Length: 126
Image (cartoon, rainbow, N blue to C red; front, side):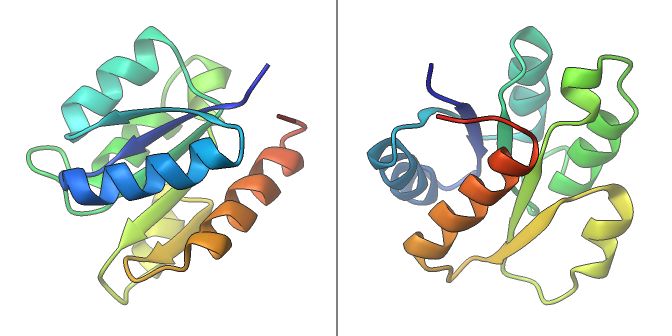
């Protein structure tokens, strides 16, 4: 069974690019365009990994991460999170529980490597 990944960004261009890359690596990818939508989708069916933009309308990526890390469900609380950001400040993200960061001008090969690494670290294959 393919690992399930949720990509959250308010830019359809970003979600399309990330989705295509991750699907080409064999992952099952769904998308959300806001923090609220991401939280709803995660609570309904937790993915194996989250790729999360920091700057989102409404609930931003930092708050999404805070809420996930406080969740009672371990599948949600321990969800690996890769933050996408155009900002240089990574310290706040690590403080709220992000597992990794990619700058918005990321390389698609690097994205695949980091996703694969975090999934393997959690014992998730496919």
